[in-house]
Length: 172
Image 1 (cartoon, rainbow, N blue to C red):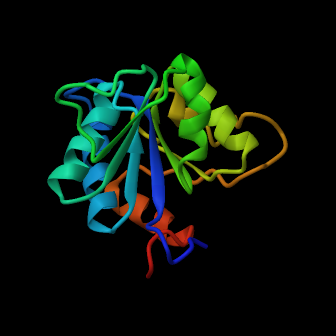
Image 2 (cartoon, helix red, strand yellow; image 1 turned 180 degrees about the vertical axis):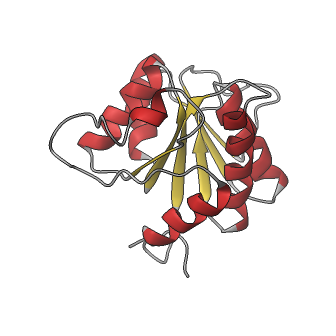
């Protein structure tokens, strides 16, 4: 359960190209999270994570962006709070830990790294399914056999909202 002193936080991990169904669902997820008072944590490094952040901001939400560089002066970066960690790919641990849950969209090697770290630290994983990509396989092929955290797939904004409610991140 989330302490009453802060809003729930959900990390957006992954990648999807503009024009794809996964990209459109990333945008819808960002808007949904903002409307439900959930802080979006995003690196904004891929088109999918960036559009989720942009839509969350447009809906009046809070977006924390943890970037791998040490540059605090990034221009046109969609966020409320910018955290330049200067750690390169080691930033993936910060991304994995910064959410009460991690939303996984598609994904490449960096996403796999973040997911494995989130799994090790018992963060619930919410993989987008039905759109192709690595997140489609996560439920049937988890990082290992330990069952560290729930893997709750979703394929629409309504399903995502139900999963967030199931985790207690949205009050029913």
